[in-house]
View 1 (cartoon, rainbow, N blue to C red):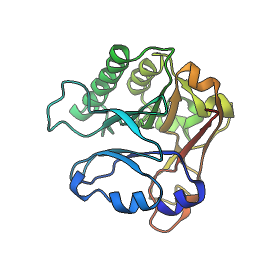
View 2 (cartoon, rainbow, N blue to C red):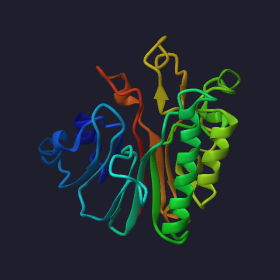
View 3 (cartoon, helix red, strand yellow):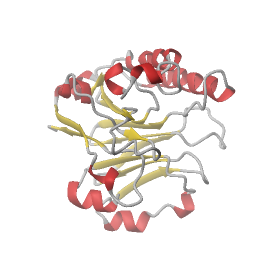
Length: 240
């Protein structure tokens, strides 16, 4: 991640699945990389989200309002330069018909309520993160294979579309039209080398933010590095 940041120098970097308790979060190394403002919300071995910024972060929100202190660390939000950034790690869901799958659908429903209760559609809002759902056939390397599987099942897509209908625009799709690109590939069966992936990492914007977005891409470069994440960075650029 530090190597990638040294080349790309993002103003704001959102992380998911950090799998790190707050006391062990590498604040010093990240500050040395230029991120003077760091907010994180983690737990041991699972989940975890963080916002790293070169600019001050205001109005911090961790987890959904009213959640218990021991709720899974899957949401962190803050305002940077007047832009409300909501960074989420949506539950995986494991398999259709399981309790964890039902939890995923419930979590997405709660995300929509959180947006309805706390945001206006004319505000500068970004929703980003590992949403763990590929919405359209263009986002899946072989739709017929994934049709009734986790990440591309109809219940998941319907639940995520309900979130999107809050008023978000998919920045990658807005600027890349019919491109078939992916942000995640399994670590097995040479899936990355064969480009058998899914686009499950998203960067969505409210209309005012979408209007000033001048670029959105998936950077596959670090996916080929030694010991990589199985996800690739999704990058957006704005005229602000």
